Length: 606
Image 1: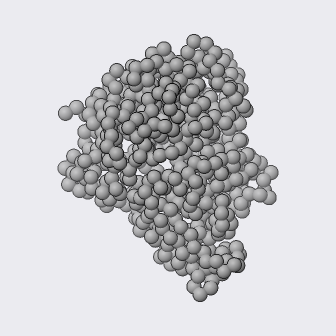
Image 2 (image 1 turned 30 degrees about the vertical axis):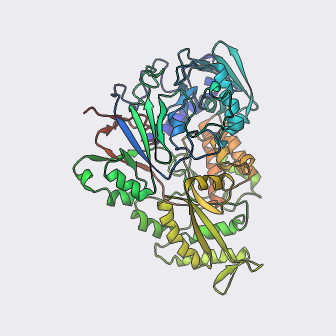
């Protein structure tokens, strides 16, 4: 139902987008801004529709992470901080609703203004906005945050910075961003960057914080204690400056959030069974059905909740690094996908309960249709017909096996593809024309869990082709360093998308960042066609054009054979202590995420 309503809403608002954007309403300060049409919530809204505005405050939430950490600064490229920190200790000028495809409402900013062409955006800061140390948020802090994150911060922030022409203070508490090119999404994305305190770094570099110090943000939580490699504790500020804002009412309800670190997933799960941690997310449907029948569940002390989601499947699987041989050859990548016996692996791991990811946006209105490209999608792809992968225009489907362990038909196809690419069998080994064996390494982080189990099955299938796959497991710090430097041949990947993808796609597959250290373009793809489809998505002013461009991008990514997809995660599965609860009648469109848990959950009073 959610997806149907979303499609209807997009068609309605998209059709009248030009009229709305041309109206006086968008030339004046507003409480929010949407990618298409108007925000769903009026200026006088009371709270977000998926929260309990009367949720009680209190209690301690204990999360479990695998591995360890060596930094409390989640905004720089170096170090290995707890992943939750960037969501918990800072805020942006705007806040993204999880119940609309892409709409942002004022948070640190009380209003937003942008012209018809969205060539600039202006924010007015709230007079009451404060950092966690009680100091006011100033325009100077805002400008410094964008400049610093854009030049010295993590790669996730640099893409936006490259598209900003200038930032200037244009009045009391007012800051304006002017963009280098027209991009309808940029005003929304600009509002979501974290704002940090400039004075904290007056006598040190942005990357110079010691392990004992976290960046100062404006959020309800701040780091109050930690034990190296063991735990991090965040405490809610009862005097948090924005506690009475409608956008914050009913959110951030736990007095304390503690992140505990475990050596691997098995130890973490045992800790949860013993209620050492408050909740666990389960991504395997078979384990959900098989392993969650222990005493605490049967007694009701632990509750099993399933949370529906309307988001696209995204892509999860094993990504091949195309920067170097042998995975720079699409025939080799195609062979690797044929050798991956998904049907057998899925039955073994999930009991066949989870469907396969069939494309990057599958399971949503944004996903490519099967068969030949048609209409506007075909028009967008046709100029690149001589340089895009086979199947992008004609239609492409992932290979399907008969579910048996041998996977004979697909193995034969893989052999043919490898022979065509110049690989032959010599004494049981697959070698190239120079006699070099086909041997590569799959890089996994410690505690990779399910990926490691899948790899153990996959390695045997590759042996039948004469290919040797070594599995290298490293700790989180080494893994991050290797990924940052693209020092891998194959590794795991998981990318989640919204129902309004845009500039994030440049970060994931844009040619400009393919060789930038720390880039999220792990496969190293450099494709003018992919870049053009992203441009078309961002230039769309109607849902029809947006759908067509996204489906065209989906075709290019899927037919490019860059990732070996596994099963999708179409339902959020959360096991939690009975004291934790949420508004089950009003689950947000995007389902489970860090903006759902811990953001809108609460502890029931004793």
